[in-house]
Length: 421
Image (cartoon, rainbow, N blue to C red; front, side, top):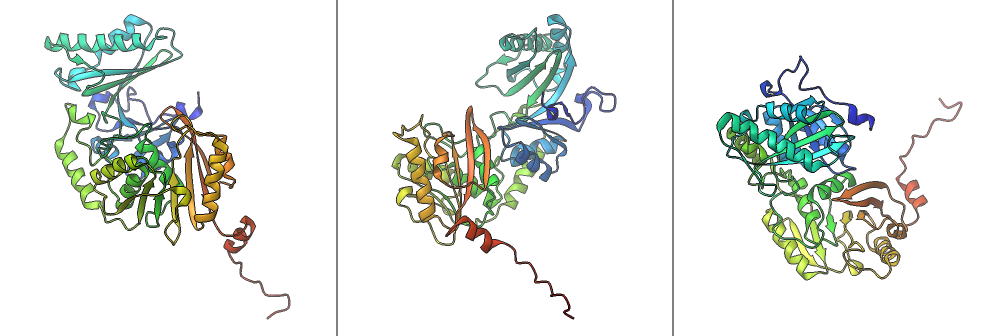
C-alpha cells in the first residue's frame, strides 16, 4: 500500500475523539481523479480544512458541519465528500453483520429515506465478491431499523437519498455517508451532452494546472459541449461550482441545518464578481455548439463567454496571447485515419497561429500526442473517468526555444570591475 494511504488524520474510535456520532469535528474524505490530489488538497486547505492529507485518488481532512457544506459548494476538483461515521475490525461474517447492525443508523437518517450501499473491498478473504459485502451491509441496516421502528428503509441504487460507502481492507471496515449525493461534477448547468463529454471536475483541474491567471484570453477551439469555457468562467467569476445544484446528500441527514446551507449560498452569491477575461468556445460541429451555448446560458455566462463556429486549423486567435486548452476527439470517438498526422497538424497550427499563448491539450492518444512536435512545459497523467489521458501544456513563442530562454532570462546586475571605487 502507498505510504500516504496509511496516513490518517485521526481515528473515530480512539479515546481522544470518542464516538463519531457525538463529535462536531469529523474525519472527511474528498474523492477525486488520479492526478488531481495535490490540487484538491490545496483547495481544501484554502477553504479552511484541517489536517489535510493527500492520498491516492482522495484527500483526507477534518472539518465540522460547516466545512462539509463548504467543501461541497466550493471544491472544483472533488468528486464527492464522504463523512466517516464508524470503523471497526471484524472476525467473520456474523461479527461483521453484528457490528454493522449496531451502528446507530436511526440517529443518522430517517427510516423513510431511500438508501444505497457502495462496497469496496481489498485483500479480503470474506468479501471476495463485493455484492456480498453490499448485501450483508443492507441486511444489517434494514434489521437495525426494523428493530428500532418496526419499518425498513427502501433500497434503490439509482434514486438513493442516503448513500452509504463501505470500505473493507482485510479485517477492517470503514463506513461513511456520502454528503454530496450525486457526484460533484454534476454542477447543474449541463442539460445535454455529446458522446464522451469531458468531466467537469477534470476540466476545472486542468485549467488550474495550466496556470491560467483568470484575466487573460481563454480559448477552447474544440469545445464540444463547452465544459472548459464554463469552468473557466466559473473560476474567473469566483463562482462556487456547487451553487447551481438543487440537492446534496447532506440535506437528507437528520442533523442537516438548512440555515448553514442558506447562509453559505448567500456568501457565495456575494463573492461572485464580473468576468474580466475574454472567453471563447468554438467548434466546427454545429450541433455541439448548440449544446455548448445552452450549457453556457444555463450557467449564466452567455455574455462573458462567446460561442462561435470556427475550424481550429484555419482559426486566427485574438491578439494579446493568453491560454488555449482543448480536448481533441479521441480515436474511439471520431475515427482518425492517421492519428500521428492529426496531432502533427495540431502542432503546426499552434506554431503558426498561437504565438504568445500557453496551449494545453488533454488526449488519450498517448503516442499520437508526441507528434505535436513541441516540448511541454507541463506533463501530467490524468484520468477522464476510466480513460487514462495525458495533459500537456506548451509555451508558444516566436523564434527558437534558445532565443526565448535568452530573451526571458532575468537580467543580472553588472558587478563592478576589480579596482573600481
